[in-house]
Image 1 (spheres, rainbow, N blue to C red):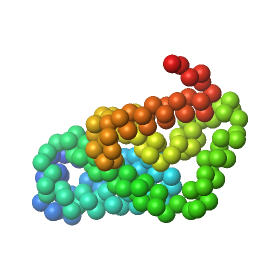
Image 2: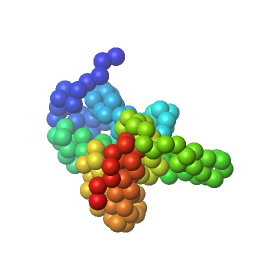
Image 3: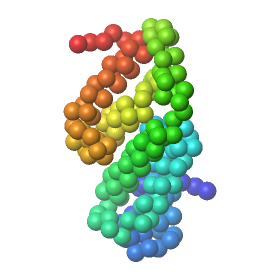
Image 4: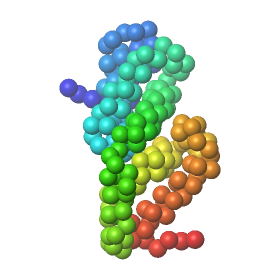
Length: 183
């Protein structure tokens, strides 16, 4: 199966998808599946969670595309990213309720504090060590380009919550990556 690029998704395909054409809906899926999975994988801890987010995103896209007001691939991209980000955040919240007692008592994070923070690690490893919420804020803001206002709305938190999560995450990442913290 070949993956379609966003460039291959034209206005006509979007209009056909909005009218419920299954072939066009599949085109939308193929054009966006890798982008959505990549975003979900960065925000979620496991590949299984990212797969769930991918499925939930496209179920929502299929259910809601008739209400999508744009017609250009660029506006569809932004719309699909918003849905995917929202589904990933919901998944993160859901996972917090399923955490084991051992993790809640700080098993994972406490173990990280005992390690030598001077050891350099790659960015991917460092991001995995952030809390789900902090990692989500970093990806939404730094990679997704969302504003603090948008992140606050998605997470149902305040703008200052988004800003403080990002600031703390950046500080922690710099420490884990072995860089000096600049004030």
